[in-house]
Image (tube, rainbow over all chains, first blue to last red; front, side, top):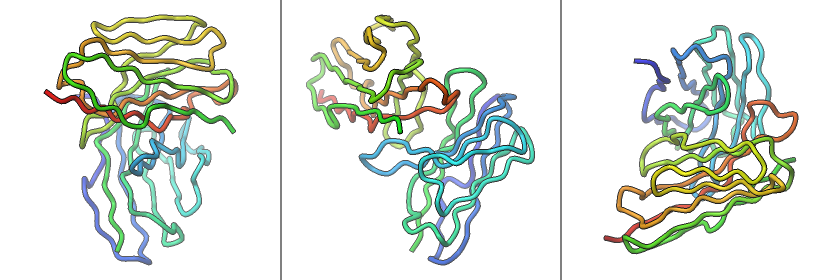
Length: 110
Length: 112
């Protein structure tokens, strides 16, 4: 089956720890995206990548980092510098036009 | 930067009533997309509008793109309980190829 996988579904971390969220796609899409979703605020773009080994900051990149070493993979690291990391994180990919979303990772930092 | 505003934030309807959500952009859009997110789920693509004044229908759903390509609407006729979820519009500006700006979404509740 073609699609996007994110793991884990739920993640719990202590404050001060970096954490990496996984995103893999087998749709052969060039572009991949990371969004953060908070209640009542819609989806906000963290980082996006349109090609391997290249990525751009989105609207809320501070405290996050990414890499794009392979076409299929676009991991997101939530660093200890992110002041309010608890949120629902969604990864997406697109070939042309519509974006396909993964199931998301719900991160809780205490 | 580009902003996309969506209203209303919440809408409660009785099953069988109609529902409309509106989307307005601060800048002219190249295209607009609509997504639906079921409770606990992830956004799923519904449709893309590209042309000025375009109207598209999917069964009970009607999508419109304004003449100035700065606003859009989604209208659902005779809502059903399966329509429950959050509806998002998302637009692409002139030079921001592939990068979508999402509205805040409209949360639709349908009472049986």
